[in-house]
Amino acid sequence: MRFLYQLLLLPLLLLLTLATHAQSVTRLDLANGFRGLTFGSPLTEALNLKLVQDKGDEKIYERLGEQLHVGSFTAARIHYKFFRGQFAAVTIIVKGATDAQKVRPTFESLYGPGHLEGFSCKWQGTLVALSCASLSDDQTILAMSSLPLAAQMQQAKAPTGTTKLKIKQK
Image (cartoon, rainbow, N blue to C red; front, side, top):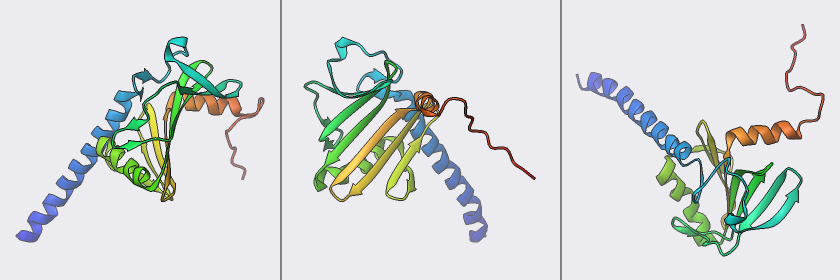
């Protein structure tokens, strides 16, 4: 009888875990941006940004006078990427063992456990993707991006006159 009870309880616990994870990733989509700047927002002077890198359609900026404290850690730099004038991604660079070790737990508390892939942990909603990569014990890079704009950037980088479809030959 006890075995039957445990057997019935296991799927329920699995279902609750999946529902909690889905709910957490939904929070990522609901945020849909960083620090009040929604993905897709236009580039304006009011954002108080300084151009760091210009790659034509893709431009990377830092906010002047920005507080680098994020949750329980302090970033070394925060970069805002704009694609064709729309906010597309944010990259947070964290240096120092003390701060680097706090990054993943901070985002797991917000969005639940991510999917481990090598040295990185990833979360993906329907609108937003988040990746936390630990390059070493004392450096972590966090990247949050708009999935629709990431697809546009990838399409823009594809050579013209090509397609990504593969045709199966017999």
